[in-house]
Length: 239
Figure 1 (cartoon, rainbow, N blue to C red):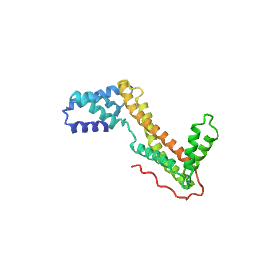
Figure 2 (cartoon, helix red, strand yellow):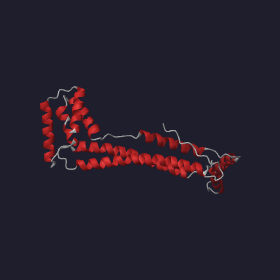
Figure 3 (cartoon, helix red, strand yellow):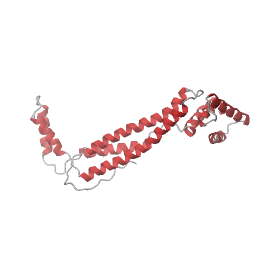
Figure 4 (cartoon, rainbow, N blue to C red):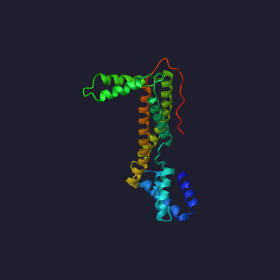
């Protein structure tokens, strides 16, 4: 079994004193686990037993447990740092563009300040609030359709990469869950920890995808000026 050979490499690197007799005992234990669970062959997941057979002392057990989870089960939580940087960059860019003043702003800013003051003193709301909304809209920067389309394409590219990264994690979770069914020897808390690593990664990706979709909606709602120069903006720096 390739997994067993890899485990031998771990033991060798740490120079742990494991005799041939101990290795035979481990293999016999793996076979026993597989047989009592109705399987004709052992697999890599059976090596969850290895830390308690091969570790030279109690302090080494967590090392082997972590090695099994990472190298044999591939159940390590991921935080998708690359996607976090991309999401934050687009959120910042959207905030910047929303705050840009209109290129042909006149004395509307002063009128807006006056309208806000009057609106705050008007318990009935009314015309001053309407004027305030109109002036705020007038003061917003308008972008060309090319600019907006470019921003949407940039966000969509990241969305596509993120969704492509999520798909194999979901497959890994579902595949592992199916493989864990019927494991009588495996402690439920260990199985939950393995699955929990994938659930963590999926939760991180889903939260970031939701933020990116929200940002995309913000770019899609940017005010448009058909006469604005048709210049496509560069993508925000995400590194």
